[in-house]
Length: 222
Ligand SMILES: Nc1nc2c(ncn2[C@@H]2O[C@H](COP(=O)(O)OP(=O)(O)O)[C@@H](O)[C@H]2O)c(=O)[nH]1
Ligand SMILES: [Mg+2]
Image (tube, rainbow, N blue to C red; front, top):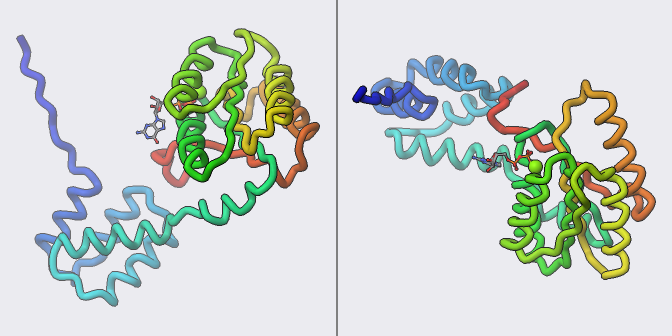
């Protein structure tokens, strides 16, 4: 039997580690290059380098700690402010291409807002594949959230209409709508999402609709 050799690639972190363990900081440009090659935004790299020059960093552990804190502060989420917006009946709609993480994000959001005591309803707006609804059903069970679904191939807007009517009647605080994956070049699917939005706006004001485009963080600057 052939041996499977897994070659360890020189990853971003390996390069960073190497830099801080072997170089003196006069060669700081090589770090800058590593960060840029890792597709980190130029402005962020500039500001990071500026910050780094003012720090006295002696070893990799200190550098790792610094980088961690730096990126956390740069990428800090605004969930507190976000929660403030969700003070009336709100709808979160997850859109994006196939496999970007919409359904998983629906579950993460449900988990997050369940902890703040909100009564949440999922609507399975991805009627394109039966498996999509099943996937959301599993998350509904795990997060202890109710789910409204339609049959496979149903018009998503009609499922969403029924779901929102149910949510209004049942005094829900938050509805999370999972939608089918779509790319912006497919006109029929873009028309479908516009129709979905119009349907949602029959039930709520625009300020209470949060339409999130879910994108893979590995996409980089693209
Ligand atoms: N590592 C990682 N995988 C994720 C994340 N979000 C989703 N996935 C995985 O990516 C795949 C597609 O996610 P899914 O939510 O089904 O995407 P959707 O097609 O947009 O609904 C699944 O295998 C998920 O487990 C994430 O934040 N990190
Ligand atoms: Mg999905």
